[in-house]
Image (cartoon, rainbow, N blue to C red; front, side, top):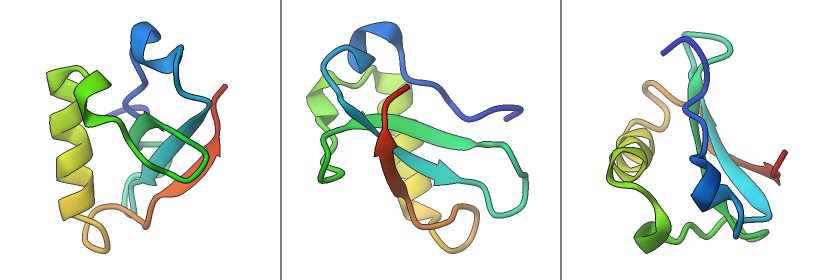
Length: 74
């Protein structure tokens, strides 16, 4: 990964925030998924590839990724 995995245009329209899992070992990389202000992700709205990246990032918190941070969507 050279840059954080970005949110597809269709998924970002409904989300006001992003849940960001930053890599612990590769600065500037990570996984970013759309979420609500509380950090809740609508799994049904995610494309399959982004959903798999999200599950992978969650499984690797503390080993590959930092704890996720909720931030306003760009």
